[in-house]
Amino acid sequence: MYTNHGTTASYKKLVRNILKTTGNTVSVWDGEEWQVKRSVSYKAIIEAIESVEEAQIRIRNAEGSEIGWALIIPCLDNDETVADYTDNDFMHSLEV
Image 1 (cartoon, helix red, strand yellow):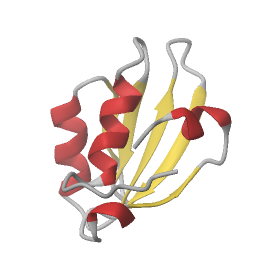
Image 2 (image 1 turned 180 degrees about the horizontal axis):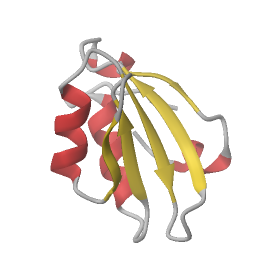
Image 3 (image 1 turned 90 degrees about the horizontal axis):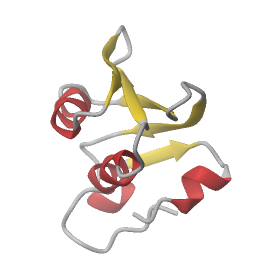
């Protein structure tokens, strides 16, 4: 799913593609607290992810239903930064 042969980290492409759909939001868990809650700000989400060694993101649709989750490890190689994710149609539809 998250094969990335370019220079942009997979998690950045993942976040960008999540936010392309109007109404989708992302929350970022840093291991202790939700740094970002239901955000549509690419910058805020990426800054929260990059502030820790490992972050989890929760993705919700416009209705507030959880539609996906991913484990992000930003210090890994670009194509390995999305370490785990929900195995569902929505997550597979994201071209990263």
